[in-house]
Length: 111
Length: 114
Image (tube, rainbow over all chains, first blue to last red; front, side, top):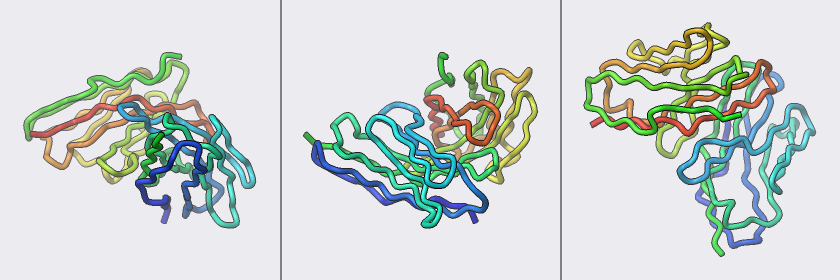
């Protein structure tokens, strides 16, 4: 069936450290892939997206590349800031009209 | 673009009562979605509208749940005879037509059942 598997958190990093949050998916067809972020006390915000194989989505220093061969969409950032502390959700839309979400990964960045 | 608006932000009610939530989507979006999110989990799809037509419902949407979108603008989600297990954050999202169009989420309505 359809599913999204995310790296379990919580993840704690020092400021300026490198971030990777792994995400793999199981879906039929050619899904569009998304990363959403939820800051404390706020709703989900779209961080970036990729709609076909080898596409790279990027925003606010975050990047993720659509790897069809490994069914992955790992999120990376070269140098995290305290303001990046949030919960990050990987999601995909496999042609249906709803998004399938992972369970989320909580990131805490300490000064 | 004023974003997706949800009301109320918080709702506390006794078990067995009925509750209704409202969602105002981004004005030019013709698709509207409802999701439920419990603590430590990602959002789970409940139902979806294109304009005023409800086109898809999840198995999570029991008979006690009903959603409407009259005139294809705002939407309401009603839960009848609430149960403890209904305690969750209820999220609304909207998008333009097309699979690649991202969904924009509201801040959600947090429901607590006493």
